[in-house]
Image 1: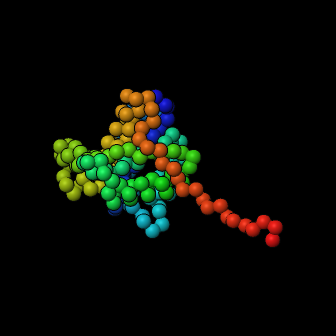
Image 2: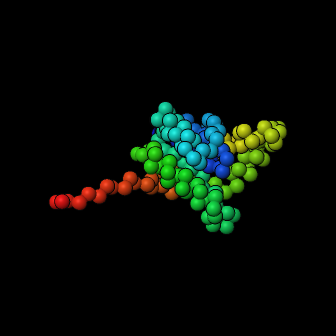
Image 3: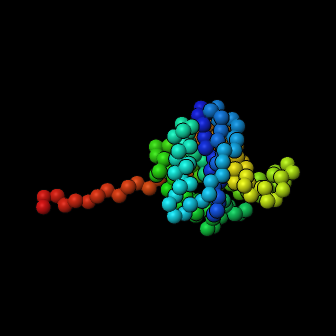
Length: 165
């Protein structure tokens, strides 16, 4: 098992939940919920700050596949978010992890803990991020390999100049 803090990210259309592991990569705990900012990307800026502040080994982003394993619009959105994030926090790697039903499981756990429906909205994304990250940690513990699919960030376009005038 690789030592280091991992960051779990649950990307929603309105909010982004964050969770972090302990330095040993054993246990995921909630950190915060960010408002999704499609215009200026302040949510990704906040994630980048957490990556630096906690000296994160890697970031794990949930990939919402359907029950059949297909990828729809939500998965495409998560892939796009992860790609943009990967370029922003490079060289810290970003990995995509299958997150089928994590939000449903998070709601169920919060309800079972006695949290009313309205109060769940503020923390459900964090709870989903915990489930995503814990699944990644467990997968790495059992296989000995980094979990999920590595995301390649967008590379800046090289400027083209004409040589020899």
